View 1 (cartoon, one colour):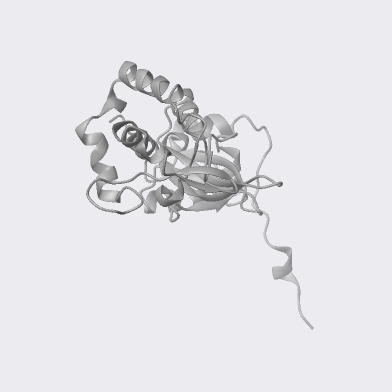
View 2: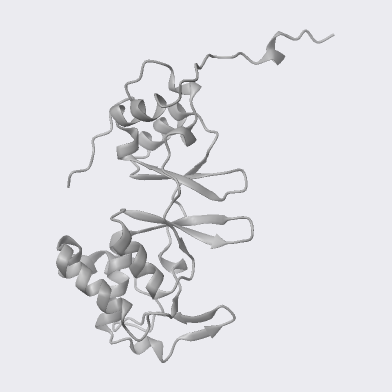
Length: 232
């Protein structure tokens, strides 16, 4: 699958504790709101090939982080909408924020696709593997009757996806990333607004070196001045 192998530690001449994770993060970030239009989902899938996207609540101050949703799940959801003939559009809920599509399963009266069903949808018809087929499918969705209808992504959001503050040391961030076996790590500011993201590629030794070398600033360890204060 061409997934980069993450080393035990990135190779760099200086201690990574002297650097912050924000110095190697990718920014700005492609993200989705909790209730995007079908058009927005299609656009983000067509504009890049990222494996996952942050889900946010849009507020006046920025994009408040909620969790993540994978690319495969988004494609599977759109496939399900196409397979059901958009029957759920007529029975969609109307809220103050607009119309939310709820995907109905044939097996039960449940409101949303079960996780195990969602995981198997792309296995039966892996359109994501063929760029031409996927592009044609996404264009069809963009021109569909529900293109401007809002869709509720909250049931498909991974709320356990970790995030770290942008001031966190690069070394600590790497230890967390590797220990949890992550593929994506969302970076937030002190208000929990999404400001960046890092993937396995960003932790590759040559990538780390390339980004950190752009800054000519010398980094030195500065001990906490409060340690030497004698309390009387």
